[in-house]
Image 1 (cartoon, rainbow, N blue to C red):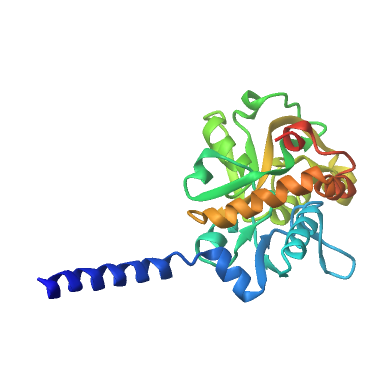
Image 2 (image 1 turned 45 degrees about the vertical axis):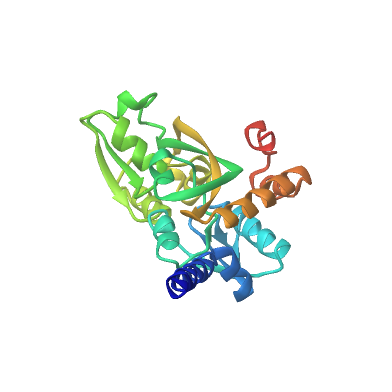
Length: 263
């Protein structure tokens, strides 16, 4: 009987030991490595872009660097695109995503989201000569979009049946398609329209209507509760001390809206 009881005790101890090992999570791994790998798309200015020395810059880059610095970690930039942001988390290529990632029910099924740290508006843009006022006006039109983005999802679900979507892998490819005349109508982040217009004034591109406004959040791998809690603590602290607003205003020219600052 004693041997039987001792066997149970040893078995339970082994299980506890295994669970203890399993409990070591991503936050522990990040701290042990002394660096944090954060995915940021450099094709979405002014959130992510390169400077005149071809170095990463933008509001998302500054946000990522600030988080790493406050945590006492080295920041490692993981290049990404709109379509590869979530896979970068799922495959372990990145610890976090800070890359114009808006919160949607579909994405929330596969990754976790932090509190909002910034905002993004998506729009339909086209040359001045094309009359567009609403989604219904896209019927019978060919529209460019970036694969895997919120505007891709929205147009796929809500666009008129006669609309044809042409998907591009990133914003730079989509912009080039418009500038070269491959598409006349496209969906994008509002702040990308002005840079595109500057590159080819003859195309007379302008915002036609707003698709939606989104909170931007930090993407975290599913189930990494401690890491998510620490990210949220950092966001709340940096909203309170004004640092996140400083970053946003530096690149976007305006303060963060109440929907972010009063979370």
